[in-house]
Image (cartoon, rainbow, N blue to C red):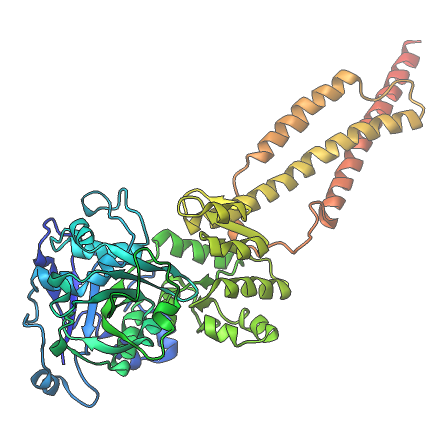
Length: 544
């Protein structure tokens, strides 16, 4: 059997096959190391091997795992090294030729509607980051992606959906990629969630080749282990598979459903390999989640990624800790009753392999537990959950029109940290509004009460003239109110717990302070008038 791993340097200045290097130790040790660590130690350190949370290497390597692991169960390194059979002639540290890269990653290229940016960069790119990474990996080896797509156009396709988590395309065979012996057949490329694709595969390819001598029975145990290993690093993993069908089974531009792939009586595809991408959390996102936790805002992650990937990313983000130590998957949530889900949403921060229906149930379960929930989303399928949440937040750049219309707030920069900034600004506005009320309300009340008590007390003239009222409003109400409105945040504003639901703007404590200030000002104004009149009468008597 063949066992090999490859990594690609997408930061290289040259587009050559030398950027694609075989390294069977790449991303192969972390899982074994973690098996020796206690759960509490893993939770304490996260999956970063001592790195700070959110840290990422400058070089964004893209690993392709192909066939068997470096060591079989019960073998040590030396035994495995002498026993393993290598279908690919490249030795450790060397690079395969361009033809191998093209054949092994053909499914990632042809089964994709993504478009790379100018010169392989990010400017002008269109599509999912994971799919674009596959294209960029092939592009960096010197392969002309557009020519490859033109030589093998799509005959029919199964569009991607978050329900079944894969997509598939049908193509005419290309001898350069598919080899000989494909007369009267069509080639099917399918890619998607590894655990879903594994169920529809009965064969595996050696070295990305579909030649009869390079295809063998699939080793499900091995692939399951490799999926878990890559996912434990927080990598987003996608499986590439390939199959053949009679040329008369599909017509040009025929609309195909998911049953074309997963609705057959027996598994029929050939597992080619795994592709993995590191999409590290933004440093500002990690900091924002930490700040949100201090502010009493609980952050949960709902993703379609593999459970192990979601858990590893949760470690990096600080979402997985002693209290919330595990992830729950979509199928597990489907099997839960409403009461069980209500308990689960209070004990889990990471939800993996979640479907749109799962998102709605999560929101409603949180609301049933008395939680105020906000949901972020960008797709059409996210719209019901965005609408059901107390605050739906849509993405302004990548979000669909449907998602934006269903939301109460739109993130112009698609950055989670902006939400935490909005929470902080909301608290500042609340505090400053209460300060304005504390300053302006007693002043305005005292103006009216002074006039009223002056009349009640039989004063011939009102204590305050019209010009005095206007001057008081200008100097006290407007000026001081403006100063309070733009006052910066108080120290520790994000260390306070959230306000209680339904809390009044003018609570009991603020009302007592306003009443006391109003009474003090009113007494001072009316009392000063009486004192002045008494003093004036006394002076008049002395003059007489």
